[in-house]
Image 1: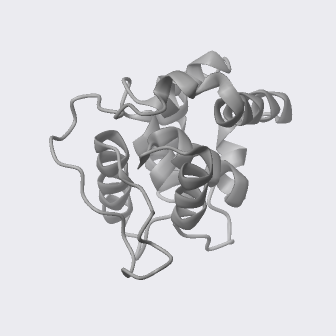
Image 2: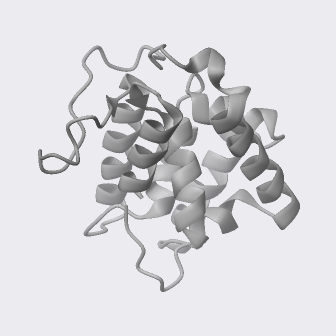
Length: 169
């Protein structure tokens, strides 16, 4: 999933992997996250906005840093250095915070690794992120989505949306 977000950022000519790149890649690769978003019409509308983002809607974001004030430093992308990563973008501060948040959600639920709904919950937790902006424009209240994911964990003691796929980020 992270590799998909990185490829999307490079292809779009963006300097950094931002939360919208993560959201787009997550929805492409994780059926549990797609299920958490809701019915197929909502998902189609959201994916439509994300595609528009890559073909022009997000041009105002190009060349700017996504920073909702979460952290001050931008860490290097995860993974080995090498010829295929030399032009890879780093993380926006908001994306780095979302990745750290996803790890924390995984830890809290007792999971051995981050799953898609951990990252989705973390992406929806920052009201100033690009992912939340895209969700809201698609008519999906991010706060409500975040609450549904976290409430499902509390009520069932497990991942309602995780099923048995074992997909991880």
